[in-house]
Image 1 (cartoon, rainbow, N blue to C red):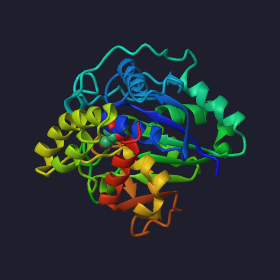
Image 2: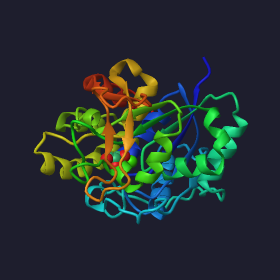
Image 3: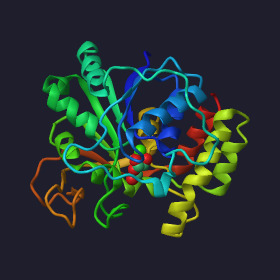
Image 4: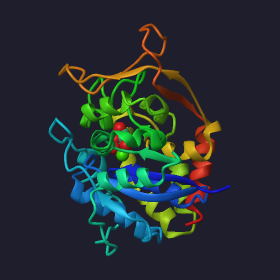
Length: 312
Ligand code: RIB
Ligand code: CA
């Protein structure tokens, strides 16, 4: 069977980096390109970090593009307190030598979707949705060429992680999220309700460290740093490993359970800005527009990560 074609839109970020490594370790997927967005850290760092991950995995053949330097309307909010100043704190980093492509990420997304016309490309969105929304605004015709969008973002019963109401990716660019959630494109959402059930633990980090390859050690060093913030905040044994769930869903969808629901994005209230209003009990009468995942087989998820990152 031909590999599934994907574009990864990302703001690395340690968890983004693990998601990218998972994709590189999986022959079922063909990564057409990596498009970077401002989010966890400014764009200059997210695009640099994406190239570091490509070099780490020996995948300098993958084109990396820089996209939006800030959200569509709101000022940029970053998360150095979680990811560190570099966005990839933990392992020793280097200045990547593979080039950043000159084409803007949005233009790459539009061009790729127009040339891969038979609607086979899946967009895997790991950060704020700014690049995706800008592409849909610039070229509305691309919507029909997108197989589906699988994104990490939002929350419902789990609340928010950057405000009591909002998850970071949606909060940073709620206007972009609104464009995507109103697009009619098939959406699969990996929210905090799900990712908070996929926790790094000491034994799982040890497993990465003992994979016997550079990628495994690099992953363990990233997660060692990444987990400290959430363990302190939630008092949990480990940190939620958010973004790799997007890629894992493409590889083993049976690990996930959810429900088709209506999700609207709050873009008016200062108090609940960026909230994903999830109609889980179907009381609004609004049409479902997304598959909202709530359950994951976390042991199977981590076994997949060990197996695939172990291949790099
Ligand atoms: O709220 C978690 C999300 O925000 C993850 O994608 C993490 O990388 C940050 O971008
Ligand atoms: Ca991310």
